[in-house]
Length: 210
Image (cartoon, rainbow, N blue to C red; front, side, top):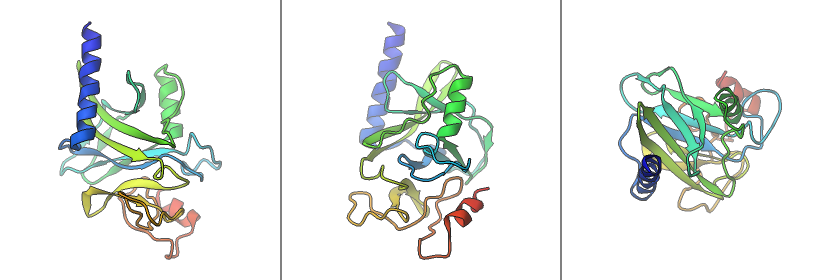
């Protein structure tokens, strides 16, 4: 009965955030790519499951220990996809690829699915587990048009409350309510706007994040 109550409270909290917006937090989901069509994790080969990615950002003004922060998708009961560790400084980001997720799942004895982001639309949740408390920190919902080849959904760099579609590699001309910005996705970096009209080959862009 106690476990059922905890799961219900967690589920209710998640739904409340989806309806009323994310709570105030220093650690936020910053960018999501659900349908990769390229080798985003840089291992030399493309695999749709390994090249999905989720990025978080420390939006506060002090360093944060992110041990105990975990990612999951829209599953009930919760299936953890990745657990963070270490320190993240103010303004810094941390990107998790599907390949990272699968290795973490294996190390924790979970089924090895990776981030498991649904191309038909899905939700991403960031929780913090501290002792017996499981607190929802942030979440984002995306629709199927966002999860198209090499498009990412990310916060606007100068206004983190606004989400944009980073669609330089696959333009979305009439996307609503999230509009395309013709910028290159930026895993592992802040959401700077690199457009496909700049001299930025795919190899050059990848080299920025190494």
